[in-house]
Image 1 (tube, rainbow, N blue to C red):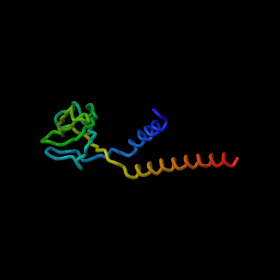
Image 2 (image 1 turned 45 degrees about the vertical axis):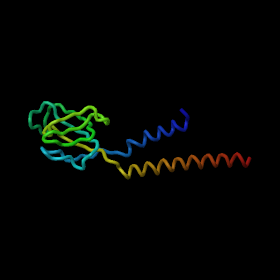
Image 3 (image 1 turned 60 degrees about the horizontal axis):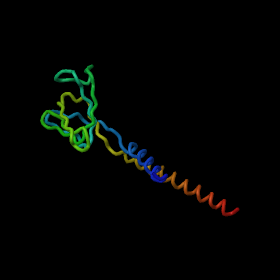
Length: 136
């Protein structure tokens, strides 16, 4: 792998997480829907709290990332993976918290401007070094 590809890959890996944030959305009710129809949702559910758990439940909690989540009847249905091979369904009464992933425009723009400024400074430094060598 060339040095340029390595740097490009590093920058790309640093950019991706900073552009997205998890935002809480309203919990789905029975026969309801998820707010905004998110493509990805992080769902926190209770395990072992009975048929109508509350957020104060002291049972264990489980957090699952669902792809293409939707409410169908009294169940929240989605997939464990992006390729939609492993389906999962859970009762909406067991859901404590739902978060959807959204793009943060301000952080994305700030990151793009910051990377652009770093690249411009690097080019400026190279030009100054070359001009200094040429005048000798």
